[in-house]
Image 1 (tube, helix red, strand yellow):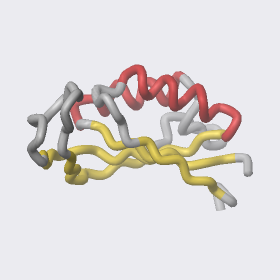
Image 2 (cartoon, rainbow, N blue to C red; image 1 turned 180 degrees about the horizontal axis):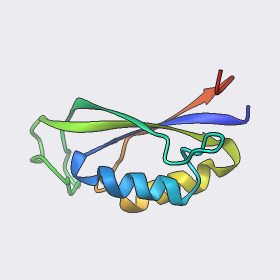
Image 3 (cartoon, rainbow, N blue to C red; image 1 turned 45 degrees about the vertical axis):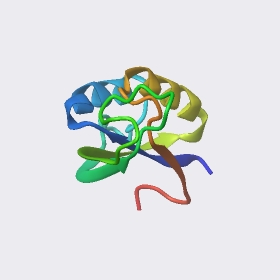
Image 4 (tube, rainbow, N blue to C red; image 1 turned 180 degrees about the vertical axis):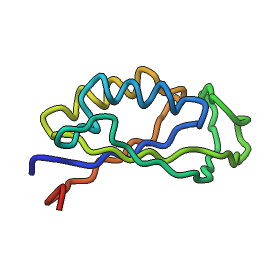
Length: 107
């Protein structure tokens, strides 16, 4: 497996810095293009538990907020650096970052 897809759930206010961060660490580079990313508006829910410091929400109460689901491809050998960079700019204590193996790209 050479490539994977990364899904990142993040507040829309952080979309621009996410795009810059992904570009700077090589994610979203396809052929002779960079900054290749898709995103869609989603609703996220969570309940902060005792001992957390939520970016948004109240401890013990379920929160529902608008978020962005960003999707970007990445070479597997760059994955650890990309995840580390995303966590550095992400406002959530526990960001949701999913990594999905890709069998083929650019079909």
